[in-house]
Length: 445
Image (tube, rainbow, N blue to C red; front, side):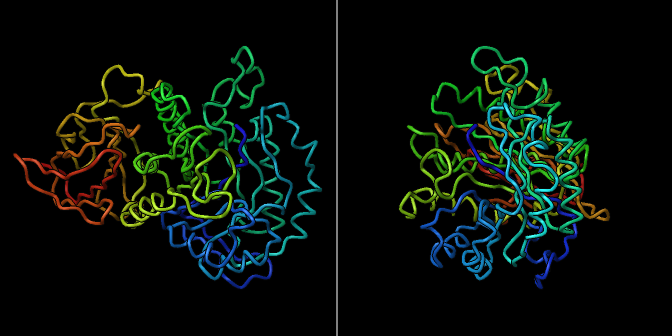
């Protein structure tokens, strides 16, 4: 993968203090009690006041890849309330094809990080410092040392590291793909080594399911679910936050990614407990049909992204009151090319927490994230449901979700959603690729 991706520290419960001479409390800069939405890449001709105001108006909270020395842009970010994930403070790193795996210490020894930390000048718009992207697991032990070193040198400054998706190459690959990008025999082992060696309390990765060859969409959706399962499970076990990077752009030669495809990627991630969505890309970084074109003008992706981000922002205050404890595949057929290969919980109708017999009225596929209150005194239970019937956006439909529960409220793209009584059950309406949060204060009888 030819990306330059990194991701922000994402622990919702982390108390972050001010670093250096800055006077703005860092907790104000990044409010981790909220669902955060970001994007990658800001080109030189897209750094005017109007451009930065448009970032904020699109519902984007932060941009990744801003040079730490670009103080004029940082000033505009602070003016409009946009965060910056900055590079150029410490040596960058990208795993690439894996040939450099295990060489991070040799190329970037500790003294380089010490020099960068000593020269760092804070700014109220800086939310985190980029320390690398998609490293091999062979470098995870040294990244652990780097994190501890920087935590001492720049106390409480968030650090930012992104992992490979599960379609990176592993030791078993043959033919042309002989270099091991992951540095392990399996993707699950790659994630396990990260969690064991790197003392960061989040796990971030990118995954782009919409391929140039349409025939491969089912295969990549299956791998997308596998990636969600491995990462979400690791986050639950290690109490890490989950950050996800979907595509707003499209691969070269493809038409612009549809609004429903954007919607599906974001909502599916929330069904697995994501706490931040970071879109690739705002400006040109890789591929085509980004939010802005090469001249810095908005493409059709801007309006699509603005609508989807607005939807996420409307229900996110309720969503963020809960944490994901499990994800269920409801209505998925026994065999399908889209089904994950990892172990997954497949049921025709779900009985979980305060909900019984939850299913789609037309038997459509649903991704259902089971959620518990973050507040230990909270009594409500919740589920976040993604309509997974048409992730390719080829045959969109509208249907009902049926369930039994007591004292239930529903939240969706337009805020609170009416809950109707229907044949002894409750019903809420959902559309393909859409998301619905159900909150029940009492279990069904």
